[in-house]
Image (cartoon, rainbow, N blue to C red; front, side, top):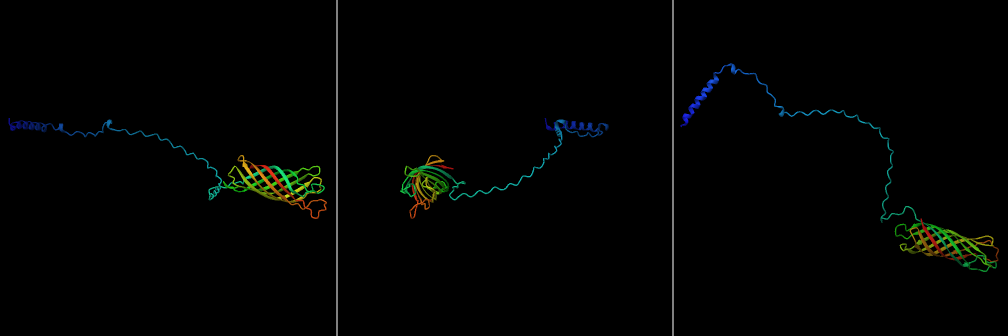
Length: 266
């Protein structure tokens, strides 16, 4: 079948349908009222969130003003460190010594015999000394102590010899050598005065004291040291209340002492 034959029946059907539409009554084609545009369904609308309840802000709490703080003085600046990095002690070390030993007079012009015969008595000595360290304060230094001493010696008599007693006081200096060793030597010297008493003789003798010593000291603990010391003392006495026929009387004493002592560090 040719395409021309098929086109004609379709054309006729189209024309017939158009005629029917155009011939319809007028009232059927009257315009209707416009339909208001509707919003999409609820499934397409996102509900607005409910407003949060407004909570009134709390009133600010006003605290009382703190009392004014007193002005603080600035801390003193620390002293600069020493060049060698070692600090010096704030307090000077001190030493107390208690000594007890033997004494002998190689020279003695005291009137210990009524017949004025010279004697060389033996006796006992006790010495107390107190010193401040003035040298060797840094670690490894050689200590030097300066202080005072107070001592006494007693020489017992016999049937023909009177008893004698001496009191000594003065300034003492002691140098310690090589203190890094547990037992080390030391040197000492001092100057002072002496008073000599002879039992049974009125008056007393007063003179100068010159003292030289050498010894060894051993460390027992940080606070205690034991020591041994040899001492030579020269005591010139030029006045003594005594009736004598000597043209230029003198009452000198030379003393050799061997002393054992205990020194305490403070």
